[in-house]
Image (cartoon, rainbow over all chains, first blue to last red; front, side):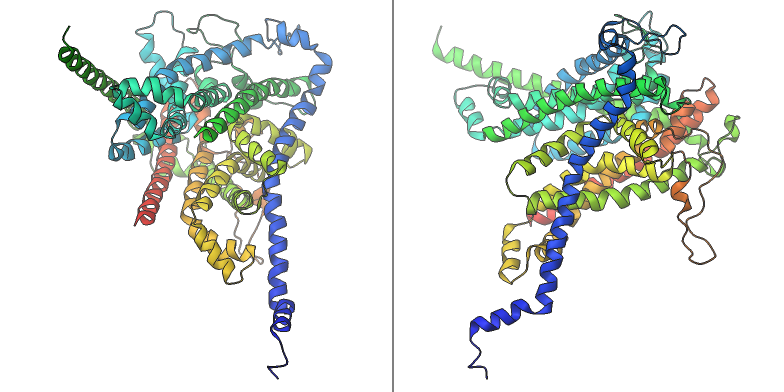
Length: 312
Length: 305
């Protein structure tokens, strides 16, 4: 009996058995399910764009785009309402700019220190501590900025208001520091050891090696870190909503308080915001501007990060 | 000038430069740590004394000394439950697809760019998505379900990235042996890849959930109320079928919103309550992150040996 059954038909019998067929069907079904999970990310991005555009449609039909972008006042609650995003936008850029002014030098020193100077064991202890800093909820940072740092800083900085852009900007700088450090340190560590050894052989110090070999070598990755951090600072909400005030204010003085785009959205959401009103659509119009700014920086950062990964 | 002299000088300058920079690095590091320490100390001094049984079992109130965070911590727990239930399976699924299945084509590229872009979308934009789509588009209202869904979307990229990294670290020999024994792709993934990637995925899930616990902006944006003086219906009931899903459709508040609300009030008594809520929030996120770091450390040790 066994001799009449050649190997081919044994294989065929096995292949057609219920056990294996069920396995194949399950595998096929699971592949479709897993693909659906992955495709969800595209759906989410599409949904974000669709919601932002469709819900702000009413706003842009009533307010000309030119007025929206050039008017210097944002007073949606007034009877003679004006809808110029410039006050919100400048406050956002002030806060994010101050955050970058803090995070850029500190982040550069810290990432060079961690990637070029610190011993592996020291690094293994320090990186988790930085991660802890990144894990602090933003609302806690907001409390810290408003109720601890601002009263403290008032004693040293004359003219500092209770709500201001300076302190929340500073706190956001500390907040995005771990993020800057982890991306730019990754980029620096991806620079091949042989480049460093070449520099050492030429008699360069670690310091000069870091600044004339490692940082130029990791340039796109380090730049990506700052772009991504800037996008994060622009979109940060709770720190500025708590400590920078909720009053739209076109100002050149960061000691004054001014509402950012995110703070405005929070302020409106806290009140009664009936669906379909002009007030409702303002938060989507400002949100759309915010989304486009962060999208530009994120995409640029993504491209640069990928570039440095390909370089070595 | 003699050559020997300048060589020595170059070495000496280099050493001074290196030392200076190392000191600078340590100073910056201490500065960052000092900020974290000051923040923790400030919260503890202001709020630790306020944490007691009354604070945990009372509803918010107009009088700061009678106010509590019962509705907030119950809300946070329920929302986190929904978030975990949605984000973890979806994130693992997407991560597995991208690492184990995706062909190198434009579609995979598109999904990949999307995931990394979503990680950078400000959390408040997710709030707007939820407000326009879940709350009004689908008519779900400002409920626990919507809160859990928006936070799940928010942490999805974190779970996806963690899953991908964990799956990538699984040695390909393991996969090849399983294929050699006649497993199909799903059997390889389910029985071999997933179990050995589990600690890495778990780490990512914990980090993601700890981020979700502290998120405030998207929950405010969907219009969650700041003053909730009742609890959602209990998930467990005495009568059959014993489980009750009405809580999914209940209005809610969460701890970060309660803290935000108390921080923005002028009375000092509410600031104490805010600090106490902050201590609890900070404690939860730091414990979760500490556990994730511990897990990763052990994982790495296990791989090395």
